Image (cartoon, rainbow, N blue to C red; front, side):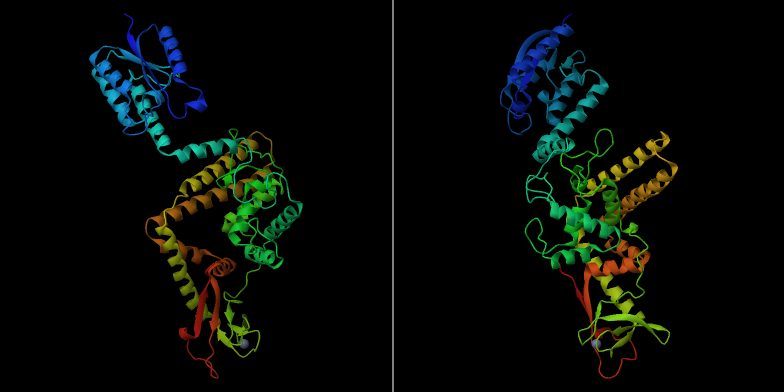
Length: 461
Ligand SMILES: [Zn+2]
């Protein structure tokens, strides 16, 4: 016996773009019924009503549920699941009726599910819960559109123009491009981002926003942005296409991909700072200021390390107790900063997860290239080590972050300090510490360490 079914059609707010007018939904559903050998008992239409918005009644939908439960119709044909239900509660009402009346049929033009089968029910539940999520967050739609634009390698975005490019975001500004190539090289040689930023400031090079002050963060962001390698980024990370390769942008590259990859590793993984940089033997050289205004540096005196004034030459102090005291203060300060960060909602985990996935994909792609014989062992081993290290360090970063989130802000900082080399420690210091004023207890040198003679000033930028 041919079942008599209801065709359900609904127009929703996004149909203009998809061209899925109620007319077309109805026609397609009728054709589907014809193919399946079902008779159309009636068409139930809801115009201009969103199945999503709570409190918006769908009169025809309500009629349909009543007729279905009463046996007046023996099933539903619709264009897709989206027409039927955007809210889990709608779907559950429908599923309840199908559970109670086992003979009912169900079909959609897009053919994604069959409510009369057990796995169809499960699929429907999953799909509706996704759909409900997506409509409850219009921002998600917007970002999906942005992602699509990104996947095509196209130009996107408002705000300030990216450094190195004109306002159209694709024409290179040669002078700025030259600056970028120059600092990329210097960064790779081991110059710190802070000193590069200061140099930019000193040369009066304006930021894209027209400001005169460059921050380490903004410079780092520029140098690690896929954009300058002619690649398309998305939310700050490299976007990979369906083939697993980076998406090429429509604009030209300022630096080549190898350089960019090396920069990215260097600047996003502190562990990969080139070790060839000479470790300064004294933790606080250059951070201590004598009462005469000059900086103090480390030197050996009578077989013991101490700090001595470079100016008047009169002030000198044993290094070890000062190092210990300042380290303690700095770590407390860092913990306080990080604890503050923890209070703010952290929403970057997705980003980190994505970066881990990308790093893993990139490693997998490399292994593929190697097993296919397209790259030499030597290239493979070097790159493989590097890529593995990236994955590891990202995972560690995620671990640290999770640990931080689970209330112990202190763990990460002290562990990292313990594991850091002297130059890494000095780098951490220069991130937070402006300087330490050494107050002289003139004319006698203090015999034992007196913390009140050291005044720390922390950075506020
Ligand atoms: Zn001095």
